[in-house]
Structure formats: C-alpha cells, structure tokens
Picture: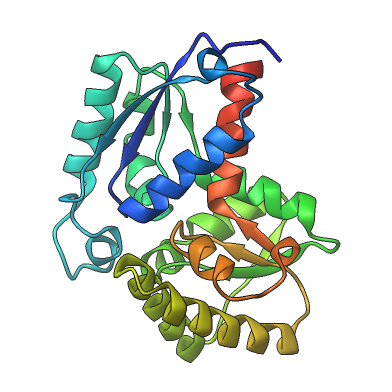
Length: 234
C-alpha cells in the first residue's frame, strides 16, 4: 500500500448521522496510516434533510433521488475522486443514475455481499435491512450475480428490525441492542448462519446486543474496507 492515497474521498452522509459517524471512525481506525498525513483527504456533505429512503421507495414519502443526485454531484464539483454513501437503501436510487457519475462510486451493497461471501462457511446468511432495502431486492439481485444467497426474516421479525433502526436513529442504543439480540437469537434457532447488516444503523445495534462480533457482516465495515482498497491500492 502507498503511504498516502492521492485520491480524495467524497462521503455523502446524514442518512443517518450516527451511522455516517461510525463509518468515518472505522475508516480512520483501519487506514494503514502511521500519522495524520497518511490518512486520506475526505470531503463530507452531511444532509439530514434528505427525504427518508425507505419511505420514498415504499411510496409513502417524497422521492429522495433528486437530493441524493444533487449532493453527489456537489461532492464531485468540490473535488472528490471517489464517492461513498454509508446508507444502503440510498443505493437503490443511486443505481438509477450511477452511470451519470464522472468518478467511481464504492458501492456498499456490492462490498457487503463480497464480505458476506468471505465470512460464510456456506453460501448464505440472514439479511437484516430496512423495509425499503428488502423491498428493493438490491441485495438478492447483487447476491445472485455473485452466486450467493440471503435468507429473509419473517414479516414480524422484519417489523422488529425496522423498530431497531428507529431506536438507533433516536439514540436509544440500549433498546436497539435488546431488540437486535432477540431477533438474531430467533433467526439462529431457525438457521445457524451469519447475519448480514444491510442497513448502516444495524451494526451499531449489533454492537450493543452482546452477540458475538464474528457472526455478523457489517455493511459499514465492508464499505470502509472497500474504500481503503480503492484509496490505497486502486
């Protein structure tokens, strides 16, 4: 790896703020830097006014695509050479204009599926994600291209996963961890395979759950690893 990456990373955050902050923490932790100057240059645009991605996908709220597109183009205008968006559901909308972007996008779904394949002893894992991401099918479709498979929670379990995300967004990590522990324990009784966190709030809930860290695939960790590869080796 080079001592200092020459590319500037543009990060679109605010979806949600805690998840983006955790992504930046992981990125700083895992970068192969020995001092400040060996860390990548990062331009961040945090826009919590971006309409809810799941609501937009489910048709119960405004379409977030125009705001996401405008913000990514703004990051490019500011000098970003590589883009990253620590929000899984946002990629359903990004995929609709990805070809318009003039710089590479590190795709969180593609990175997470690769990480899930690497962790899984078999060829599948449980997918925990927002209602919007589950409906969008972006994970199963990506997994099929990579010869992988995801298991889905029941509708009742999915409701609890969605509530877990809301607890994280509200800063109630204790309750989020308790809900995560109960849901994942149920899933493991059904099928003892890893769990893939296809929502960037969920790794925070998993971290508060007391469950074994080596049994989860974090989309935040996967995105950070992929960004480091592009910045330092790409």
